[in-house]
Image (cartoon, rainbow, N blue to C red; front, side):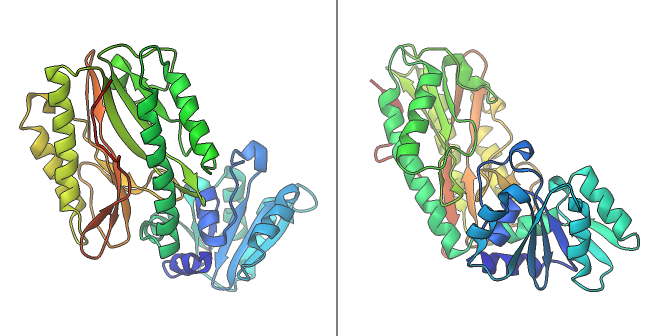
Length: 368
């Protein structure tokens, strides 16, 4: 329940706090919308105190916000429009109701300049502290309800990857395959996609920032799919790389190297494992092969309401894995002109070790 999540957040704070990202608001109050651009919904802030969360919502959204949070007694909704009070004045009023304090926590990435200025002017003696790290740590360990939602999202994305295999044919254009997959997941219950999905072919697979374009699949192409679903507000994110037709010796070696890195890292997963040790294993395995010099120094991330959450699995990562974290393991090696291979799975850290949430019924590389 969102109340459990709210309590996890409040237990990490030294005083009241102001949050503004859609993910933090959803996490603590249960309010969710995909109309997330400020121009669509307007600025919305949550003021977190021991007494609950006050949501300062644009007036034209207040009815929907109240409907979604009606069963959550710790949430209070205050509609606002530019007159007679500014949103900053509403924030000040909500914070003053919390009593005396010397520190105000803010989610820095969720604040705009006007709201920040209002806090500074309204509480000139208070220390304003960024609490993004505290929010990240609270969201890192998933509740049973979150894990159930993540499993449902991963299951739908897994079905979509099975369907993706049927789309890999000569002449299939990248943007058409991406559109087919999004439609498939929408029909299966996905609330859109958490990020721009990848359906890339040939040399395009070597550039990770590429998005699906006009290129059509050809015989011997590597074809990379990277996408996720959104179910019950929670996301999924996983990747498979195939080749259409008979793979060359180099393609087979590249695929096997990336697959080995992924599997060796997954087998290490357990509570208490230093995250850096996963990076060390990935680099150790990659360095054993000539293709390893193209290994991208990035191995994965946590996942939840957002498709990329803290912590990231990257060089000099700190901290250890903990039970009920859900992370991705996604090694990739991208070779100019030849193409790239990425393998990615979602993994739940369990008390005894791990549970893989994604996967194919038959893990193949070559598609005919």
